[in-house]
Image 1 (spheres, rainbow, N blue to C red):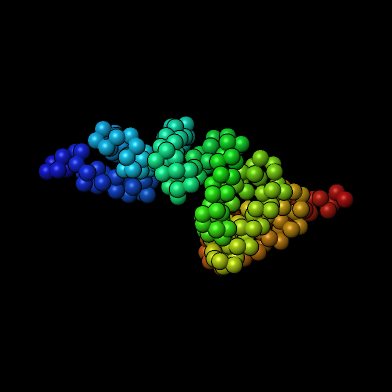
Image 2 (cartoon, rainbow, N blue to C red; image 1 turned 90 degrees about the horizontal axis):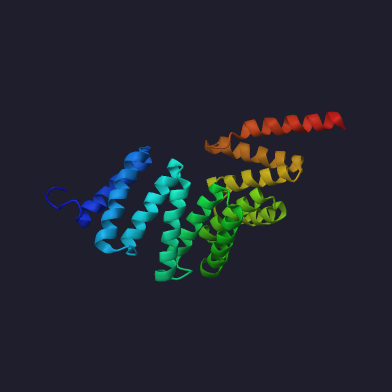
Length: 238
């Protein structure tokens, strides 16, 4: 840094990379401080809409999101999306990625209708550009289904999750983490629809596969135990 200077492109790249490492280690405040410096320098040197500036803005927004500063993250992500639409066009992969990221933040903020609108745009464009079964299309379908589920549109959510599940099993296999996530979400949709038998059966299948590959971020056994207890209580009351 002393030889190159604090605003030399190589220095800024090194700072950006260090911030990424700190972020992965969970040192989010340190990462944020570095990312702010990188963003300010790139804005000053390259301008607000240079690709490197937009990358710096995107990574800072992600850190802010992890820190729970969702409004700040939303503000930055909106700026990135508007710039990429102007520069790259509405259906460029980077624009769609920015749209997907902003939708996720809106979802976390509880702005579900706004998130749904963006996710529908991402899904329609992904289908046109990448095809119905591209991983990015399936991700777009999955995230839209989750938003619809939160909105209470369970039939629409179920239809989308079924498509994702069938494609994931075919393309990725039954034991892929993405397939298991979809199975887990599908079970919850059936539970919310009141179809507890189907929900339990699918969650049992998910639990077996979770145990087999050694990952279970959802604590599936606890969910199964809860649902079985609810079913038993229902049967007693009948």
